[in-house]
Image 1 (cartoon, rainbow, N blue to C red):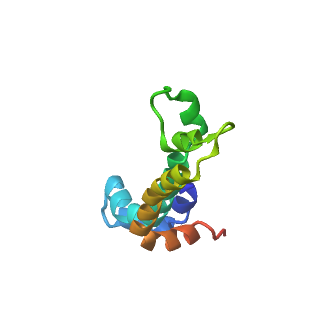
Image 2: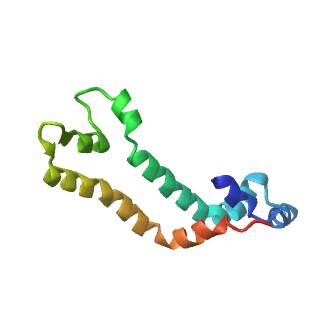
Length: 121
């Protein structure tokens, strides 16, 4: 995902910075990183959402007394009692809140980041 954002950075800007005496590290820090910051934010949010809601890996690798929120959400569904909608709704809300807060915090980067890597030459 980040490759599309990095490929959009014009090579001419990097060459111009190198010609003006910037080192390779300074070129990356002062030219490339500011241009791909929006893409990094979008990638961060995407990876966070994927890992935050991971169910299968958490179910198979966790110990029985250690539960992640998606696994705990699944525990309130049984064949005998049916679905317990109250606890499921409460846990679902708690699971959703960090993703929404993170989305609002990086909102200014999202629009630019979602559209930045879409255009192909």
